[in-house]
Image (cartoon, rainbow, N blue to C red):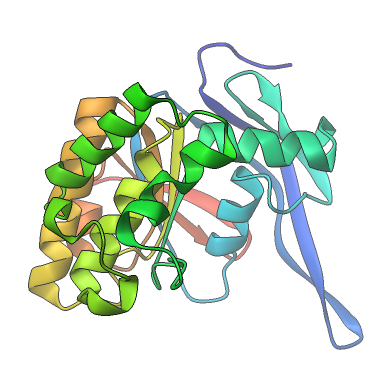
Length: 230
């Protein structure tokens, strides 16, 4: 049963995969609740299933058992087409390696989520370009991603992830491919936009700075989620 006080509700979640001739269990019977507007840092060793959990939250992957409800919608009961629509409309993704489309300009990359969702009205395009100015890339709108620095590419990736005003932002090591100073600036930007929009964020990270500034710290290890206290 979905609890309306939880924005994200995970119950009895299990995921395993084949490793040679054996089945490896990443996690089993996992329960978790996340409030709307929270900024959650997800920690844990490599191979513990953190990125897999993000994929499950985004409806990219399906669990072997259990369910995930986001804003009252149970993802694993949706068809693949409905999950794709949910992901496009309600979820933003930020990755370590930016995932920008090299043949599109900065502006075209930014507007792509609006185009895919049929939201590219003049008013929404103006809002998007204002967001581009906010992240300091307005003068670069006609450049291609290869002409941007790593920090600029990540700023564009964050703007693109937020341009359609998603309820949920999933970030997988978004500062992991940047130097410390650039990573700190990217984190400042992300948190500023998070506070302004009230977006719920779940971020996989190894960064102690990210962990220090998150609302909640969760550690995924040996198939279990543990709440960490400062």
